Image 1 (cartoon, one colour):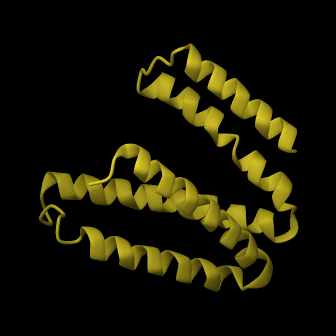
Image 2: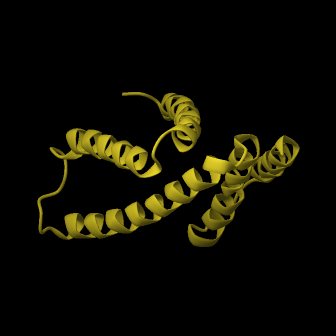
Length: 137
């Protein structure tokens, strides 16, 4: 089993590759077909990976997981679709950093909803992240 930092490194690289592919997809291919294939292949991998380990249908955990998964899927679809539309005609050098501002929203949401208390390093990290996004614009 990998450590959280190994998973983080993989996610970091995969996220960058996905963003790059998204810009190519938004400007080169049919948006609807691109999204359909992207989500279908992702769903197939998720089904293959997790179908055997899931709770039995009808259990409370499976029902809540299904409901939350549907809600998250709708939100993810809206996010990705509008992201593709922005990238279709807009400059990636501006759009990617602006989308990166979600770091601030996630930081604040973790404080409000999860009652997490960041230390001074977290606050400085947020300030530096926002400053780097501002400089990239």
